[in-house]
Image (tube, rainbow, N blue to C red; front, side):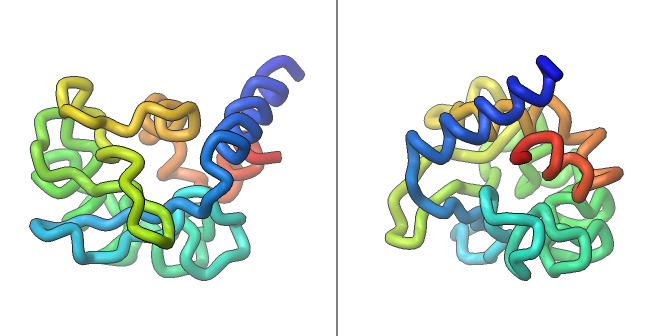
Length: 139
């Protein structure tokens, strides 16, 4: 129960703080759309929709695809590469920058809001069951 409350607080604070839908963009020019970070699990663009493009662990542009460019922990464009200098960015629909989405704790302007920190901490478990983790974090 306490764990669920902590996850709810994380979601609530993120929503209140930003009040915006947050999106991930990757690649060398940050021009490759990687999905919506805080959309619900039924949204086609959500990283939490395991049946959608960006929540599917087999899709090339999914951060959950361990063999793809954006999900491979050894790829420079992946948020899961602890040494990357070219991780995805978090922006809202107007292009306002919320930080780099990366495990690299030394990356300047790293996204450090609660939702991002939760995803960083549990990313290995999340990729195995995106839908269940959406429920843990957001509901």
